[in-house]
Amino acid sequence: MTPARLKKANFRDEALSQLSATALILSLLSVAPRQIVPAQALIAAGRLFEMTERSIRVALNRLDAEAKVRKLARGLYGFAEGAEGVRREVTNWIEAEDRVVEWSGAWIAAYTGDVSRTDRKRLRRHEGALRLRGFRPLRQDLWIRPDNLRGGVQVVAADLVALGLAKDSIVFIASSFSAAEDPVTRTLWDSASLLERYSRLIEELKRSEERASSLSIDQALVETLSIGRYVIRHILLDPLLPKALLATDDRYRLIEQMRQYDRLGQRLWQAFLARYVNNERTPDVGSHDRRRVPTH
Image (cartoon, rainbow, N blue to C red; front, side):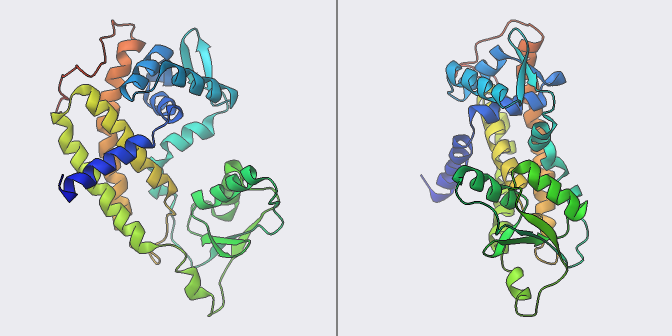
């Protein structure tokens, strides 16, 4: 296998390996009509990814226990009441660029020196919340990010708490740093890696979209959902830096490319779900199905 082919195979394999039963369920709920999905559709979708019926049902029970998904009727599932945050996390990548505003040069800071280190699970969630919203540690117990998100410090602070920020944290505005510290603040994010990632993900999305018409329906379903989820995860984890710290044109192009790719995936998966939602006879979705993906 040539290096180029190996790289493509590795990308698809990596994307597929990161798709869990939980992620599959939430993804299908987000695209389903009225956000309601029959359990049998979820189980059939799971088979495409070599997930067992038991793993799908265990994931459903876990999501139910976490008040993210609820059983609406016999064999029917939807998002739980009050799970708006879950729905938003699945889809808010679409509006990622709309959350960015002009940067004045100020920073949002989070002081975490009073946070307990004894509960490792809670600490991981706490630090994960900070990283998810683009914060990086400037010094021990002091995390910062540019103040360039819509709503400013109040909205960001509330968002951090919802994501798991420890209650003993203090979130505030730092208008500027000393001449000695200012250069350091601008190197906390690996800009070169971010730009390289944008370029790679854009190219992989284009390749996958071009490849779709040569795949069977089942193969295309698997590829569009696994690669789409993989790219969306990178968009959600993006620190959304201002132009002064990073050339942002490629980030915008990546989101636009993902929107186009998402339309392809939604078309395929909505057709798959319609077999179950409309109570039509469901064909076998085994690997022998060689129907081709429509090109338009």
